[in-house]
Length: 155
Image 1: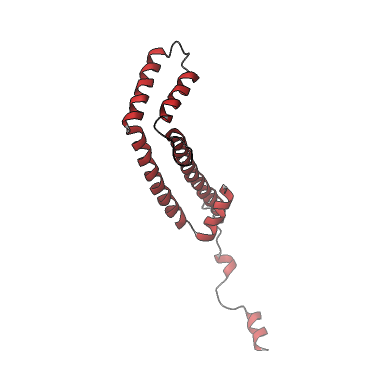
Image 2 (image 1 turned 135 degrees about the vertical axis):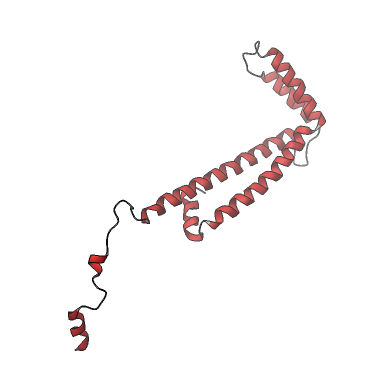
């Protein structure tokens, strides 16, 4: 999927699909953000994150404003103690997948928006230039058939 393919779909199906697409993606994101907030409000996760935040604020000068790899590895081990899903993923792995899905959905909406703008910019070339309006009246004549056309039709 790219901007040109979405713009082609807009030409084929009309701008009405934009509203449907954005609404569907909004509902998808609402579900994902609900799961996201549930994860962050879990007492075990929240407690560990608060502890790490306090530690980092206290020691960020010593760490050159970079969170140490060793502490991150230790944090991952602590989260692994919560359990592993049937497919072998930890809760942190599930959270990474969730964040990826949210990012992909936001990227998709941005791409649809760009495709809509591309479609409109391509369609605008068919609008007349209001600064140079062509007067068609002299070219149209009186609207009555020309004498030569009448003569040709009578024969």
